[in-house]
Image (cartoon, rainbow, N blue to C red):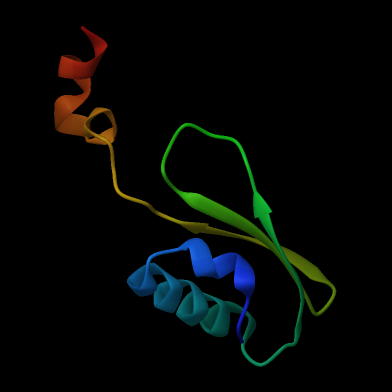
Length: 77
Protein backbone atom coordinates (compact mmCIF):
# COMPACT_ATOMS: atom_id res chain seq x y z
CA UNK A 1 0.00 0.00 0.00
CA UNK A 2 2.62 2.52 -1.05
CA UNK A 3 1.30 6.02 -1.56
CA UNK A 4 3.77 8.70 -2.56
CA UNK A 5 1.72 11.32 -0.66
CA UNK A 6 2.79 9.68 2.59
CA UNK A 7 6.49 9.96 1.65
CA UNK A 8 6.63 13.49 3.07
CA UNK A 9 5.63 12.17 6.51
CA UNK A 10 8.30 11.11 8.99
CA UNK A 11 8.79 7.34 8.87
CA UNK A 12 7.06 6.66 12.20
CA UNK A 13 4.02 8.70 11.07
CA UNK A 14 3.96 6.89 7.72
CA UNK A 15 3.68 3.56 9.53
CA UNK A 16 0.85 4.93 11.69
CA UNK A 17 -0.98 6.23 8.61
CA UNK A 18 -0.79 2.84 6.88
CA UNK A 19 -1.91 1.04 10.04
CA UNK A 20 -4.89 3.39 10.45
CA UNK A 21 -5.98 2.80 6.87
CA UNK A 22 -5.71 -0.98 7.26
CA UNK A 23 -7.74 -0.79 10.48
CA UNK A 24 -10.54 1.30 8.96
CA UNK A 25 -10.84 0.03 5.40
CA UNK A 26 -9.19 -3.38 5.68
CA UNK A 27 -8.35 -4.92 2.33
CA UNK A 28 -10.61 -2.64 0.25
CA UNK A 29 -8.56 -1.24 -2.63
CA UNK A 30 -7.70 2.45 -2.28
CA UNK A 31 -8.71 4.47 -5.33
CA UNK A 32 -7.32 7.88 -4.40
CA UNK A 33 -5.08 9.49 -1.80
CA UNK A 34 -5.20 13.27 -2.00
CA UNK A 35 -3.48 15.68 0.41
CA UNK A 36 -5.76 18.32 1.93
CA UNK A 37 -4.34 21.77 2.56
CA UNK A 38 -5.21 24.50 4.99
CA UNK A 39 -5.30 24.79 8.73
CA UNK A 40 -2.82 26.24 11.18
CA UNK A 41 -1.49 23.08 12.80
CA UNK A 42 1.36 20.83 11.73
CA UNK A 43 -1.06 17.96 11.11
CA UNK A 44 -1.13 16.39 7.66
CA UNK A 45 -4.58 15.58 6.28
CA UNK A 46 -5.48 13.32 3.37
CA UNK A 47 -8.70 12.48 1.57
CA UNK A 48 -8.90 8.76 0.94
CA UNK A 49 -11.35 7.30 -1.61
CA UNK A 50 -11.85 3.57 -1.21
CA UNK A 51 -14.68 1.17 -1.94
CA UNK A 52 -17.07 3.93 -2.97
CA UNK A 53 -16.57 5.81 0.31
CA UNK A 54 -14.57 8.91 1.23
CA UNK A 55 -12.47 9.17 4.36
CA UNK A 56 -10.27 11.84 5.91
CA UNK A 57 -7.04 10.74 7.53
CA UNK A 58 -5.42 13.27 9.86
CA UNK A 59 -1.88 12.57 10.99
CA UNK A 60 -0.76 14.74 13.90
CA UNK A 61 2.52 16.55 13.48
CA UNK A 62 4.80 18.04 16.09
CA UNK A 63 2.83 20.38 18.29
CA UNK A 64 3.84 24.00 18.43
CA UNK A 65 4.13 25.49 21.92
CA UNK A 66 0.91 27.44 21.30
CA UNK A 67 -1.02 24.22 20.66
CA UNK A 68 -0.18 22.67 24.02
CA UNK A 69 -3.09 23.61 26.33
CA UNK A 70 -0.85 24.49 29.30
CA UNK A 71 0.96 27.05 27.13
CA UNK A 72 -2.13 28.72 25.65
CA UNK A 73 -2.12 31.64 28.04
CA UNK A 74 1.56 32.30 27.38
CA UNK A 75 0.98 32.36 23.60
CA UNK A 76 -2.06 34.62 23.76
CA UNK A 77 -0.30 37.39 25.65
